[in-house]
Length: 222
Length: 234
Image 1 (spheres, each protein chain N blue to C red):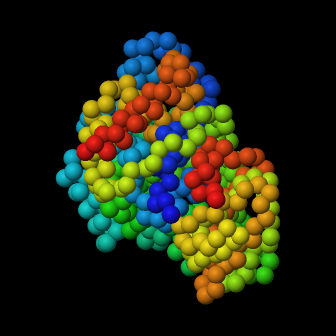
Image 2 (image 1 turned 45 degrees about the horizontal axis):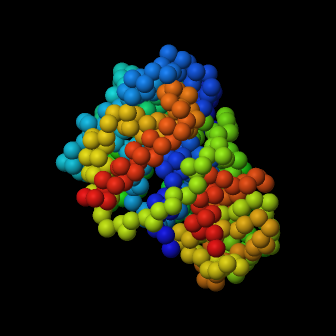
Image 3 (image 1 turned 90 degrees about the vertical axis):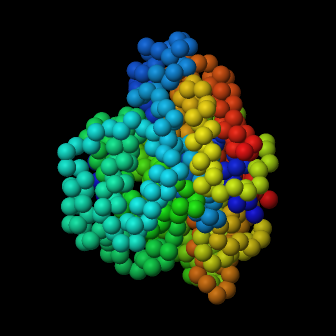
């Protein structure tokens, strides 16, 4: 498997991900996949890092640091409010979400506190994430041995294994592996035995994936 | 509800035609302006004063101390260096001073809270904080606009290259990117800044710089390839 798919992409596709210009769901998919694979900083990301450190500093207002520390102290010794919001949402599998890699964890906790999980068949729960853009993203929790409903797609669907493992018509997938289902393909991921499987699914609303996702599809589509 | 959301209306999109026209109108067609990056909002950054390896190690140590013991002195040093730079980055994206300060503060809170997730083997502190700032920017723009990738962009096709076998560490990559960037002509740095840092599309860059679209594409490709070539050579 490819460690870092950014190295397969054109410079413009890399720039679109690194700078955050592309669909937020795509940035999330890219960051999560690279985090799971332990990918090192891409050349494009390092360029952005260098430009940040050589920026002309803008003046912060007086006492900015003290106000920040006061806000941190006030907020229960620095506990993340997103977590508290998510914890307040009953039955949200909070410990499992905390184990997710950033930045997906933050998006998941935010969504758990907002819309929350919805039941989607025996052993299946779905957490839609709050992302803008043409592509939508959700986390699917699959009990061992359970399957998502058999489904087809108008567009391409990317299914990234986050933890546990699943098997579909194309093969078996572990953490960091990506399954790409083309339009019209019927696919039905089934969680492997022994462990709850979490996946991140990204798809567009009936539009054909182009750009970054098109490139991903060519690298990973089989 | 996140703190940035109420202010997101003020954060102009980089694809906003009005802001594009505003900054491009006086420079369009002037090759000297295109060359020195004066068409970039806030001007071009010179990457020559990048952090030395020793300073980068120091900042990585400081983030380690925040992670290990919530060390406020370490955090204060990180804050003093990065908060004003993150604020500059956000100002470049079109935010006003108040919003830029607010988002910079949010980024620094994330640095405090997520310090344990920083891995010095994978990225420098600068690269890591840039990622946090970029995600905060995406968040602030949430529900405000549709991203504007042009499906016809030919360069959005996958690169027709075999990626090099990674035999060097992230630390070496970070070293070499700094060295390579310092040697690039300012004109090429400005184009990389527009594409990788500010997230302007090729079309936006063409409009603002006054350069033809084809020239923008080929120059960015050339500059990025130069960086990667330098990396492979060393």
